[in-house]
Image (tube, rainbow over all chains, first blue to last red; front, side, top):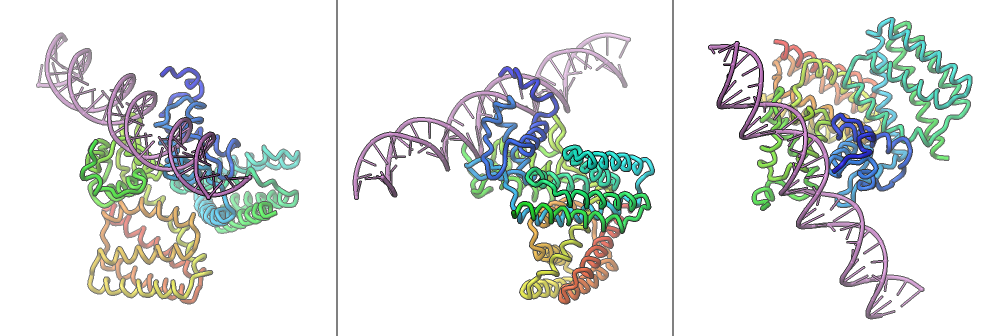
Length: 222
Length: 222
DNA sequence: TGACTTAAAAATGAATTCATTATTCAATGT
DNA sequence: ACATTGAATAATGAATTCATTTTTAAGTCA
């Protein structure tokens, strides 16, 4: 088989690993939602690969909880339910709280500086009401805190669960009130880190996430 | 291909899913350790399946963190390092603490009764120094607490991470002192649950795990 | 003897093929 | 007209085949 456009579609790496990433984006960013069927064959053609690596990638994504494989029926995009959201938030909260404690115990001045820069940019995005930029910066800040904890297992688990939430984020917008609250929660976060107060940071992160949880649930139930 | 003994080796289900479970057991229970190569072909013959489903299963296990796939080099059993153990324990600890809080908030009298029965059996196993039985009951007790939290996401994450630790457990034995300490920690656990004191339970679980962590690290470093 | 080269063998990655199971849709009967 | 049956079609599960890469090992030359 001549790979034609597939060469430009997927640059070499390990194909299956590349596929997992590409599919994750395709599934999350747009294209699919609800309990849609994930068309194996169409995706193969679109990405220029055969079914074997595609099916391997789908199995990995299923293990990740992003899709569900039904025997002899193929893959369906796993519709995120309110129940799943309610289950995800406490777990992510516990992980973030742990990250906060660990991070404060060993964060470097340089990392704090990076955080403050990101935080400043986020304020700017907030003032100019640039929601997309705000989202991206917000995510970067949380990722920076997690990675400051220097715990690979923690980072992996957090990433996996956050990805599962990403589906919900695209549905739910933010109210003005919630947005301004979130900003001030972030202000508190940064001061706790500067003082390296792990206990305080853990509490802030936990309640920050609880607020977000409530906001999302409220929006979804409307 | 005639399936012969494979029919009795793997009873019907979804083959790939069945394989994942079988492989997990084979990898963990004995057979493999350290950075051993996982012989794809040999396993195919042993279990009577072709390479396609086997490779799908290996990819899932790699996503789970049990093995590492090196491009064009195959799978190697992921040797658990002290660093990984040090990373796993705090995360599992955070999950258990969360489970303790959630469980206390909604555990039924029936579930408490079950726990007390398991706890009694564990005491018996301790008195007769039956280590294997003790291990099994200990695991059942922790699983019961987790499942009493009624959070699917939490259960899944806990199971995944616990499996990764199982490798270390087979290496490390318990000292008499540690064993008797563990028993009394369990006694405290049960009373906290009976009083439905989530905060206390969370703390006990966390410190229980920290003790276990230290014991394992001490043994491994000798 | 020991290091380097290179040919053969084995293992892995991916596509294809074959078999089985769902799904679709038209035809039949009520 | 509606439901039910059954054949045709499509999709999925798994084995096989083909291509590429790595490993092994023998042979050559310093």
